[in-house]
Image (cartoon, rainbow, N blue to C red):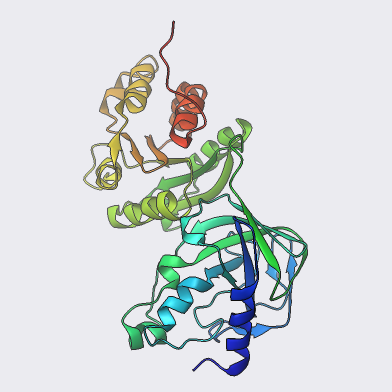
Length: 332
């Protein structure tokens, strides 16, 4: 059951007036050891590129701070869950803000701290005690994650302000290399780093670099996560586009697509034919899933550099249209 102090805090939050786009921090929670339920603390010291000082789940990665809307927790409790602050593994419980409706890149300001949302929701690998008791857990669906951009302190009762992402922010990207030998450590991946280097030189923020075996199920899982949860603008895959029975990258990519964008893959094949006739054997595709463009590239570092060089300049306009920061107009 919620204790008397928790009820008083909830009443105080509910009675506090805030402006649109603002909420009130209800609780700050940490756990000193992984595997131990988080508990509320009087304040949290947020460190840049780390998270909350003393929290076992903090670190230099994209899920430094977890947040959950108090309103979602309250609705869950009214169904008999009776969970306390931190029970879902969240660091911040905030009333008045629906984090799930905000896009990745949203800036959050509370106390003297600045956060940036990096992921929406999370995959539940093992069902927690709440799930086993209630038949569901709201954290995988409603929870969001952020990284710390500015150090400071957040306390319960602090107002949190949310600002949408800037329209001119850099595009985000992820690169996935598909290689059985690479995944087993038998071959150094040079294709993924080559694509990452070219993207960064073009001004992209490359948020993830992955190396996977040629397993369609794994690729589909990662493509869905990167598009839906991380909401990256561009995902490049390298490898798995040939005639081998293990080459299933195009099929896995098409399986997660909402819409086709064939011109990009066609342009890569067309321009690659000037380099080698074998370019006609590439089965790579290019598709859209929600706000993410996914493009298959060949597997060799040389082919990756050539293929990406053919399309990189033109992707800028397409990604701006996809993001909604440019209009689609015909040339005069």
